[in-house]
Image (tube, rainbow, N blue to C red; front, side, top):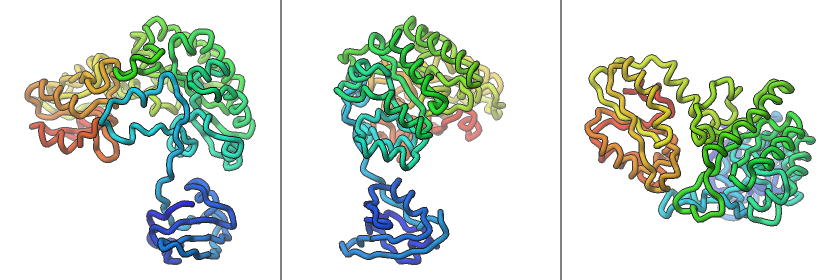
Length: 420
């Protein structure tokens, strides 16, 4: 069942005087398991809705409405289906103590895959749960494959299941489900000939496999004792070459790149990220595929406002700082400002973690204070959650209160400079 968290004004639910805190138990005799069930069921034109009010009393409403019209109920968030795997590269095991509580949640929930693009392994779905994906046409899904060879995948996942991923993907794509796939590349585990096999197997599933992104394993100082290690530059280069071979075939046969190496793969190899044509319609930016190119193109295309005489700091991770430097120098000349890249070493997770989205507020504060007098400092908005908390739970407001300059969070450099 789902709990009613909000009633929209002017809606059917308001007209029926449904109450916040009530639970929707069944619709047309079928149990309502979660929000996705509710959204599918409420679309019918004739509804028999069984409600349990906050006191526990049951009420049944018979409703006739235009098919597709919503009832005007906002359900409370569903309980998250958690991960039962023991992946050798699990990033959550690399979390330090005292970070945001949400970061300890091991989600492996197909509903989050469908609604938010989270990658799932499909290992915690029994036959009925898997059939639901097909029956409700939940598409596209985002699936962490890692390897298609059963033994290799089960070793990576750390559990004696999940080796049937090709069978499951075949069933999904034959039912019309579209799938984005992912490989977290672990040297000595699923690279080399194993990666080639995975690429070929996924390609043969046909065009309903929309993409394959290959990203390097990430480790923190809290899980460096794992049996996996970071990629060396030559290994990252070899993986990129394998992806490029797959891309040439995909361009020739389907007119799309299909396979994409993540930004961190290019940085690990010491290579420049590709141009915008590499990323097609940018389907995987949230998965670290194309975000660096978007930043560079944004910086190259902007005409900065006149900022003569101002000294502005730009906060980022250590690896991205090197990539940003040429673009920032050009913008400094064009704006008349003294723009300074402030690389922040990640003392929370350790120096192996270089992405800006995982910067701790305390690390940002220390780096900015060490940079000297500034008129403003730009910080990556992706380092904050929806409650304006850094990953170490430091509120943005606390950072602003202890720094003497303006603090401007932004996803794009152009938007940040325009805001000054």
